[in-house]
Image (cartoon, rainbow, N blue to C red; front, top):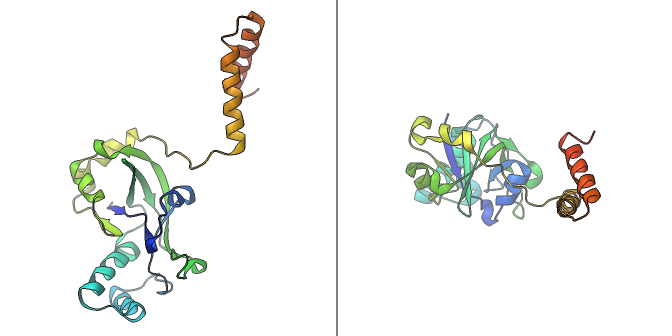
Length: 206
């Protein structure tokens, strides 16, 4: 199992929250078409033709796109960083989304992700912290999974927070706040009703 760090700015657009909510990661470079099963040599030719790249610039772009399309495999670990947290997930197979293959969207080269949770970056192995400082769109961890100590971290991940609660969730939280207030009422009947309702909710609403 390999570990990859990914930036959240494919095609120059910040997509951190979209990655979490949509359960995917992607790279930019639209216009290359479907890259499923493409060889590294053919990929080099496509990048050179579409983006008029050569020399070091071509090699740099080729390395990142090839890492995402060919080197990364289903079941590998991907990490994205934001505001002191590392969000850790497991990637699926490469997918090509033709509807996003344009200069406005620029996110047609994708992989689905099962987000497992998040951990404070400061708590991670120093070598993983170094990986997360890499400025490339995609960067592979150069050491083994065992050396990363992520196996220990995975057992203590915090849930990934959702971007925005639904209206129902917000109302439910408000209702719980009312019940909490009722529990401190001077009226014993009100306290009893609130306690009874909380017990009912705890048991699943039955």
